[in-house]
Length: 73
Image (tube, rainbow, N blue to C red; front, side, top):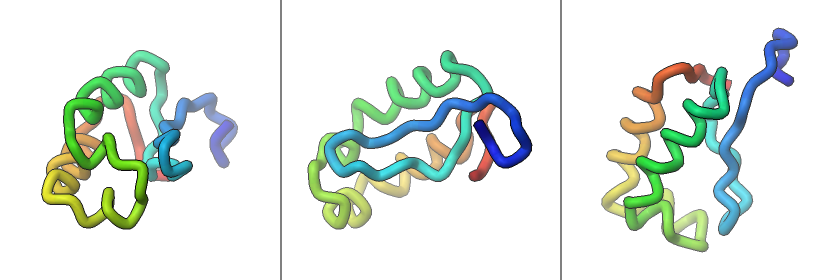
């Protein structure tokens, strides 16, 4: 549950344990975002530092920021 008591979904990158800095208002929105991110090489990294410095990371950040039904945490 978010600070404003809204029910939200969050995405955690299981390989690194990193929580993405967005909240999703529906499970479908979170799932759609993960499906887009899964194709990127940075998403498949098990090392958080490598993931953040990967050439695909700017694209992943744009996908995350543009994700429908989401908001910053």
